[in-house]
Image 1 (tube, helix red, strand yellow):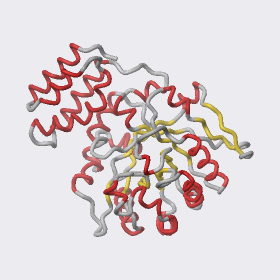
Image 2 (image 1 turned 90 degrees about the horizontal axis):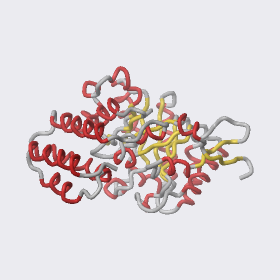
Image 3 (image 1 turned 30 degrees about the vertical axis):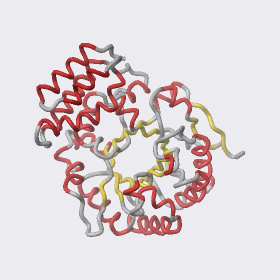
Image 4 (image 1 turned 30 degrees about the horizontal axis):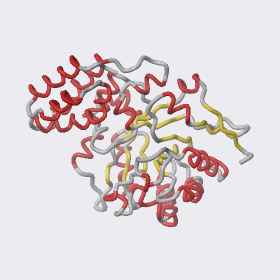
Amino acid sequence: MNSAVFIFFDRQGLINMKYYFAPMEGITLYPLRNVHHEIFGGIDKYYTPFLTAHHNMHFKKREKRDVMPEFIKGFEDYGNEIVPQIMSNRVDTFVWAAKEMWNLGYNEVNLNLGCPAATVTNSHKGSGLLTDTEYLDSMLDGIFEDLGNKSISIKTRLGFSDESEADRLMEIYAKYPISELTIHARVREDFYKGEPRIDAFKRAVEVYRNAGGKADIVYNGDINSIDDLKKIESFDSIGSSISCTSVMIGRGLLSNPALARQLQGGKPLEAGELREYLKRLYEEYSLFIPEDRNVIFKMLEHWAFLHVHFKDNEKYLKAIRKSRSKGEYMAAVNNIFASCEFI
């Protein structure tokens, strides 16, 4: 403990920090990434929802579509800001998937060791791999033996059922040339509930550094405001410039698309730009989702987060949810903007 000190971020630290948009299955697809990048920006990296590397070396069509450069506007300019996340529990499938992504022009891939969904963990994937550290160690050994000169990052949790599991996990991660290590400050059995385990996060970073780990550290877990960010203390080894200078934000950005801009000293979310954001999302989804009602169902996934900006919104939100045609939906959206105080 004496080898390190934790310091709070000052205002300049908030501005200089890197901000990553976390992957969320079915939501942070290329339409959202395209539109968010154009309207709000402020994001250093967008992570794709995970692509499952199947044993017969193929991706599902819808997953592959999400990372194809032709669907990503300005890929040649901001493609290096997009990180495909891979779900795998085998060396051969991960290596194959990573090479597929690099062949498409991506610079980095991310190994998902954090997903808590039972359908994933029961298949010994995502955070399910955290229960078998011996196998995890051997898997990483095989991956980096084959791909050691490539940029491979990891997204993990502090453990599966107990934060004490983090010590062994950090010792394993420290053995390999990981480009970045994102730590969600919860264990799998927390899912997304309860307060993030900040003290356990700090201890995990310290164990990782003391074990010789050199990857940049990324914090993940309930960043919804500047006050939330200030609760997270930077890790700074004495005599070293290594520090935790990046955060990954998921639900916070879905609720407030301007959050990264705001955290960097910019203006808060405005009603007009949120309206444009929603309009553009609808247009993008309409290009590949058949029938109005299916596009509306997709938009409702966004309204589940964005409704918080409209005071006393119950009856207006209900009208949006009941919409079955584009005309009904647009009228309901116009009504909520016209009738509710924007907060």
